Image (cartoon, rainbow, N blue to C red; front, top):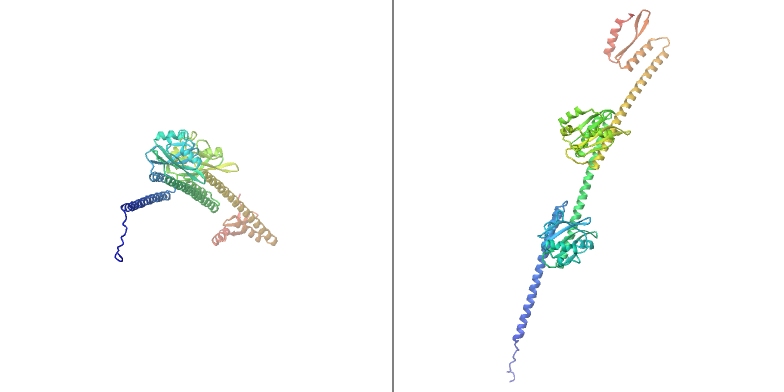
Length: 484
């Protein structure tokens, strides 16, 4: 019927509807799986970042000790890589030495446990080839890893992964993961272990550089201290040109401080006897022993004497064990176990000794020996400086006296030439010169006239009292009769 016809719509079949539902369920499952995978990846990434941050924190908080870093790294590697066991090793010559461990396998790793660097172990081949090595079941690899098979059976593991620690293209160690079952580590685990290996290298370098800097700073500080002490001794030498004692006192004080000693002493040698002339930090009992012992002739029974006899440095690391040392009552009184003795040499011969002692057994360093030699040289300079200064002072005094005598003689001769008919000015000039050159309070010249003597001239020092006393006394005594 026109206009009255109804158009009917085709309904979907049950089969097509079911197919759509299955498709939606499949897509939903895939989405859920992707979400779960992403969630796992995010969780893994967060764990890795947390572990990395923890390792970096330990590195920064332990600049001089690598061991806490190794312990944290082994624990993180075992946990994040789902291993039963993690070990870290360093290369020491031709050996692999284990320095860090986490897990139940091979609890005796560390200490003296080591392996040779050979291709027959997984760790050895890893560092020799400079690349990661993984073996699914090491217990079955007798041909490829004959040395490793024995260890795998001994410690009860199968799968192993080893990643080298590389610095400037050279392996310096490695990290190993092990499992008790046959279960290969994933690519993600290998990449993560390489990240830990890089961090281990950073930590090792950080400790090495920090220790080098620490040593350099310590050396610079010691050098500055030594220069300061040397400068102080030179200052004392220049400010004490006639007295060597302040120099000796400064030297023994500096020797104790810069050589980590407990006390120090300085001895003079006159060719026959040794005398202790300076000391620092001696006990009262020790000083009493020194007073009883010195001066003494050189012998091998004392370190100071031995340095004089040998004309060389004497280093006694333990006086109790030294077969020639005899005066143990002295060393025990001052609390000495080791001593360093450096002779003061002048023109090839000894003129003294500087010594520094410690309360413990041991050797002094080369730097400390060199420093004490410098002090010995400075002591010789001080001795020579005082000797030369005194010689110069005596020579100047002699020259001054000679010049004054020449001046007085010339003055008298001048008066004589100008007083040809009068002797009184000559007598006056003579007594004035006598007072001036002799340093006496007054002087007089007497003339002989037959059987009596009379005062020809009188002169006194500028003191008016001395002049007055002489002028009062002489008239009452002269002229006077001569007596035999």
